[in-house]
Length: 95
Image (cartoon, rainbow, N blue to C red):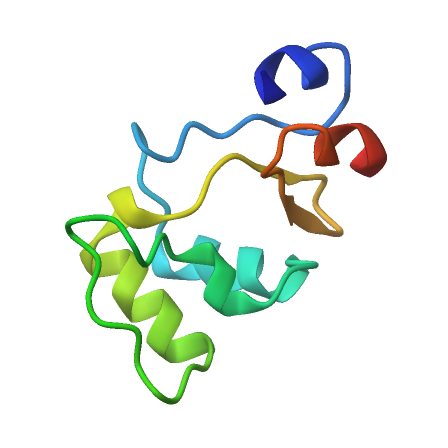
């Protein structure tokens, strides 16, 4: 649904499940993220590690480099700010 909402918008759609993000790309994304960084990880997925007691950018990036498939999705990123669009209607307010 988010892909449909953003079809006519300018943010780039990155299919990161297909093309995993590098450490540099993840760091940049985290720096633009409007949500708390721990929300980038799908903690309830079967492949997700136990949620650590102390969470910082390095921990989240290390987890997502090791397990890119547990990254929350979809994310809209306009190059200045990024937002997790769950539920999809969040994409409307982002645009």
